[in-house]
Image (cartoon, rainbow, N blue to C red; front, side):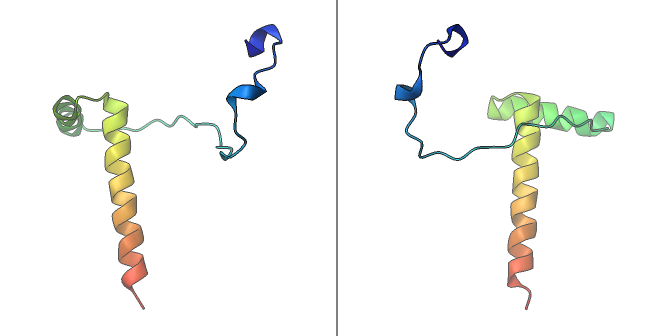
Length: 71
């Protein structure tokens, strides 16, 4: 609709926040790590990228929590 010039403002509440665009990165993994990641993705029924993001988010959260406990 928007691409054809129609007003789509009725579909927005203006209560959200703007997010920065995604940035692609290249990551080098050993074959063993890649195999483990693929197995995790199968177990979670998600794509490889989603499994990577889940692991990364968990690691970042653990790091943030560990730093909060330090005086």
